[in-house]
View 1: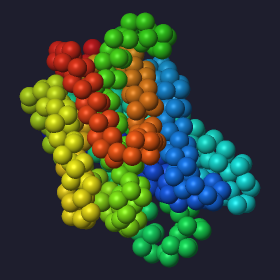
View 2: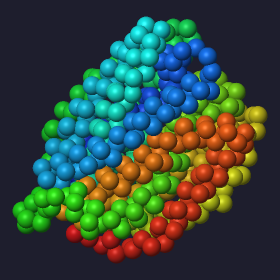
View 3: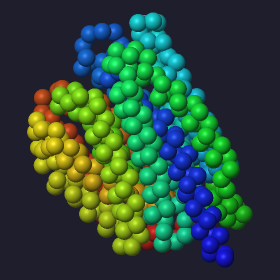
View 4: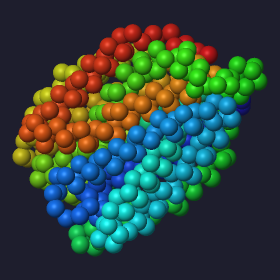
Length: 426
């Protein structure tokens, strides 16, 4: 009976954590799915490539704010509690998302429009700076030993669900509305839906129990009173290590989930509907394979699984891009699906690995710093850098070289990763 109650409790934690985190990622990801439309609404008519770069730069701005949000929420999470940080973060995501749907365009208020858009993206970035690392920490600290990889992958699955939901909603509205109606007002509806969706997540998070690992550390008096200072002073090696490992999560993921939509439409000449359909297929692949990879990491070790997949990025990215450049829809579909397989297999164990690297006393802060610094430098900038590489070099394979470089960094970082961190959450 006790074991049945424990399983029920764990199921409740996983489901509630997935729903709230997924809703938050839906809010944040919508911007990527509407990048081309936003570039037309918030910048003057003219150079389309320059406008697209500017739109992706604003996408990156949301990530630049994330390390600041990571510090802010890291302190709350390590000093006040994981749940408190998660409750505040979802409120800070829902409001700006709804406001993007209400923003006047460049035609209405001129240059003030992109500046307001930047301000709202900064607020979104601050929120997500604490939300995702908090979600990973919260789930893995609840998980029993031997299942941390699988339980932690629920945070990855909910991320994908959020992106998938955003992709489906954007795709549905492009099908329901004429191109003229979609670009004039239809694109706003998915953002406005972020308001009620966010408050659903807020209700769920308020009714979750606090992490037992955190509660135990609190009772024992081992929590840090200055988590930022302690993390930077005593855990800086692990922070650098986590950044190196995470780079092959964040850059390929945003290449797949954000840039490939625009690349497929803008560079490969396919329709918006085809680009969004491909993205939906990619997200489904991540949703299915990431938990399998995480489960395998519980059996054979995170290091073995992730080094194997990082090597896959190094050796197979170039031929995948060769297939992607073929002027046939089936080739584009297969290429993106193969890339999605690599992303899924690498991303699955990452939540448990990041939690296990850092000690409980500064875990939220250490994770937030490493994850958000990496996401700001290499994730949020991925669409902008990839577009710049293609425009500057004229070589679309330059994106493949970028992915392969990230894989080398992760392989070196994983080589020095010690599996002993998997034994206990100290």
